[in-house]
Amino acid sequence: MAVLLVVVVVVVVVVGIIIIVVVVVVVVVVVVVVVVVVVVVVVVVVVVVVVVVVVVATEDEVNGLHTIPPSCPANFDIKSYLFIFLTKCKNQFKLFD
View 1 (cartoon, rainbow, N blue to C red):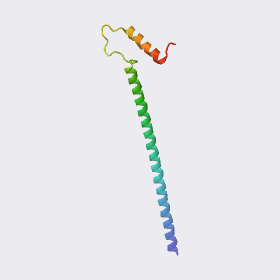
View 2: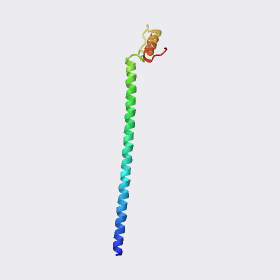
View 3: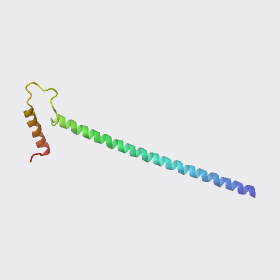
View 4: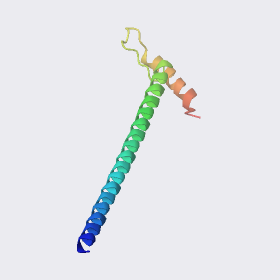
């Protein structure tokens, strides 16, 4: 009878340990998955923001908003350039109204 009681106790303890190990593994896997998903979302958001900023800056440069001539010729007139730049700013951002 005592041997049967020892066997039952050992089986209950082993099953309990197995259940605890399975629960811990499941919790660790869930935490790792959540962390990976959060990291992926953050990376995607950062990449999208960078792409949008680069595209907007490139469009501005293509439109001439921030474009400064790479080399100033001898007859380059800074006042004319500033007038064109401020006119574009005024038209795009409705400044000076």
